[in-house]
Image (cartoon, rainbow, N blue to C red; front, top):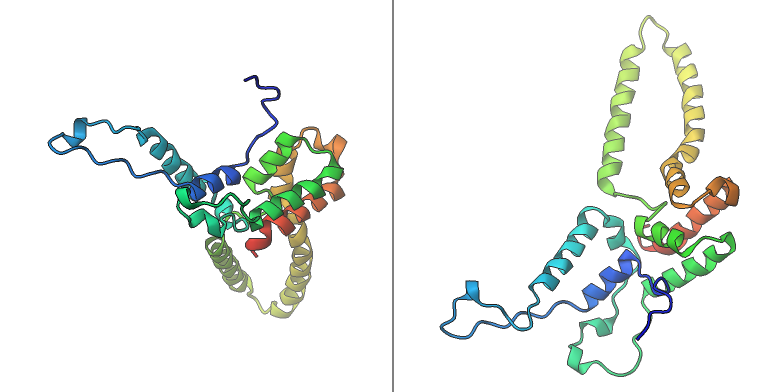
Length: 219
């Protein structure tokens, strides 16, 4: 057997996680009676395989939690026993449809396979965390509001209120632009020579495509 193109069948992190979730490792056999379990080596020895599976799940949970919120990637047939699986092809999952839709819609932008792979693995444009981050932002806004009220002295409440209203309006208008700042910066690091290849409008459209496909299960 000869490998023609080693990069023709690359997998994303979510696809690896999908395969491991649909094919859990087998339980190792029990040692025979009278054999010390600490010194017994099972056959086949799946201990290293089980360690790899555990580390991948830990990575997804601790460092890439957005992978766990991608569209559903398990099919009903994945719960069947391996010996009873039918020869018919398994039905497509929501993840299969989302990935195909994402790749098709990104084709006009001329991204390389590695760039698309990184966009999917990093979940660019998708929320990194949920209620915890939102709660933290709410607390910070509350503290800032209290600080602003404490500074309102010497009877200048009316003038300051009008001025603050104008500032708040400007800040509110900038929130939409600043909200994607992290995603835009990450796109610049993922896509090589982004400024020469893609306009800012193209990047905004790419982020929208990612949110509409992979982010459909997070909203």
